[in-house]
Length: 212
Image (tube, rainbow, N blue to C red; front, side, top):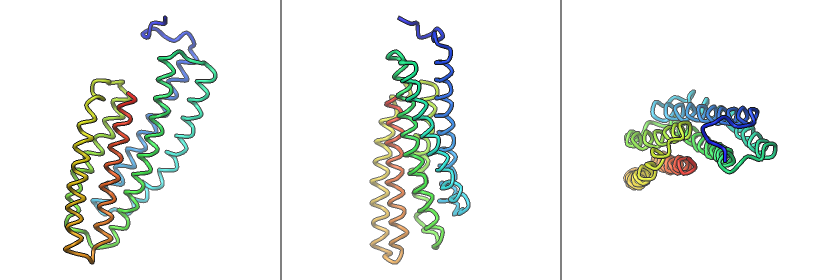
């Protein structure tokens, strides 16, 4: 049985794995940048940042296709042993979760653009803690993947439950706002949808940690 601490007998296999992980981390970096820009678009009412977040999605999609192709090529060409196979498949699943997070971030940016077209809702800042928590969960999940930090990854589920609770509380608060100010219905609905989007991003971060 091969010692996991020794170089793989196929040097080209090792290089293929390095390239695969590098592309996954590049995809994660782009998704993180989009997440940051969507936040600036939402809380700073910066329409230009919304546009950048939306435009970056195409590059993220291209990387997912590339990573999927690389993973399949590795599996077919090298037919790796179980431990190596798990690493390849985990990287492919990671890219799938990243693509979904990027799509959710685009949805935030689009709703942020709509919100910027109207006077700011005074309750918008209530969303900041949930946004920060979802982003922290996402960036930490990427770090745990990069570091193969199993112990840290196990701590993600309690954070996901806390994010779910925040989603419920904020949805209730914004629903109450609608009853008091029906004229701003669309704005509050956008905030409620953003809460749901952030909750889904937390789910994807948890999925990444489960793969780790």
